[in-house]
Image 1: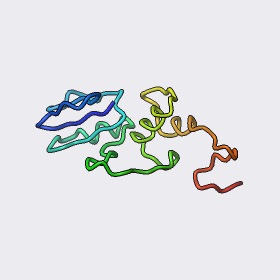
Image 2: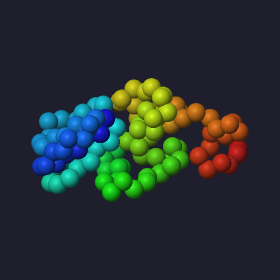
Image 3: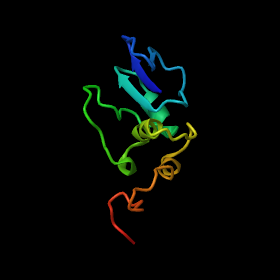
Amino acid sequence: MKVIYTKTPGRERGVCYRTKYLGVIATATVVVIDGDFPGVAEAYERAGIQVGDTKPDGGQGESDPHKMGVADLKTWLTEQGIEFDATAKKAELQKLIPQQEDGDTKPDGTED
C-alpha cells in the first residue's frame, strides 16, 4: 500500500493519505513525504520500509529487483503475484525473487 504524508490529501485509489503521523503503517510498500513531517522517515526506515522510493513525476526507478530498495521490491513482488510477510526485511524479500530462465540468481549476471 502506498502511504503519502501531506497537508493536502488527494483521492488516488489504493493510497492512504495522512495529514499527521499516527505511527508506522506496517503494510506500507511505498512511503512518500510531501511537506514537513519530522521523524516520519526515520520511523519507517527503522521498520525496514524505505521512504521516497517512488518518483512523484512518474519517472522510472530501478528495474532490477536485486538492486531495488525495500519499498520498490515489495511493489515488484506484489506485481509478480508473489506473497510475502509485510514486515519482511530486504534480505528475506530478495530470496523470493524467482531465478532467471538461465538459472542465474546473481544480480550482476556473474557466476561463482
